[in-house]
Image (cartoon, rainbow, N blue to C red; front, side):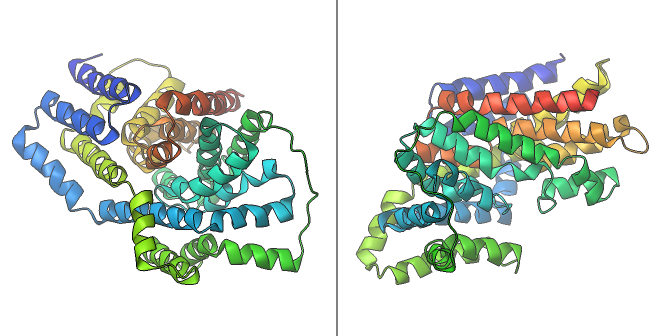
Length: 401
């Protein structure tokens, strides 16, 4: 490993150590960005440029707005009893609460929204509370099932970007990656179902027009966001604002109670952490540290499958973004996949990058829901790592066949 690689490794080790020692998330990432800038000699102008890139990004402020509104909406739903009604209506239809818990994050998973797992955190938490399962498992279920679709669902930018960079159709990409969705769903259920206590009372599945209408009345904020974005392509911030205002009006909440719910549900540390994470990503670009790994791989004689795994995994892990892993790694590694492109190798590369995304401490869904469920990083990785490792192992077997 060259000197640049050692510098990058030192930053990653620093971040991981501080996170596992439970140092404040925003402070940890800010220190990581500072050390990165010092080690890569960006100078004062580099630090300022990274700040300008972050503070001047409409995407950053949009995501911070989404995080605040989702936290507020979750607080409203919990405080008014709407969450309890949602759980009851779902249970009336599905019957077994052990099955009910998987549906909210899976449904919202169709929505490629930043920090989307936070949107269903309170609902999954309530169902998990009723099932008397630990917070670590509740977090895993909400986080994992939110992310099962991105392996091939073509509404996700990462999948679209993969097809574009490889010069193949979306259908071709999806046809070689769709089964990973079912693998992820199966693994999520295997890793959780057998840890649920057997319910004392279990009803059978029953769907009637009345039950469906009652469910729609309670989950209308979720339906509004889902259909508003997926069908009508309305800005998510606007949809969340409508949902928040609608919930306040429908529950006839006073201004003082609204203020109380906002103060108790919206912790400013989380929006601050989002900003700092994007600052860290900007510092990776300004310092050119993001290109250290591909430059190392070009000059090293390493096995093909390892190159196709390590590079996208590390980029996605460092940035917390699948799109970054796909954009950078596929641009560099596409020639290694043959001509015409070997889509089995492409699928292996994508799954490798996505696994880094799922394990990244800078992944917005992971950090926001970790803070929501008040679980430690050890509890997070104890649940998530085995599932991710199993997916990667299965992907490797499929690639080698």
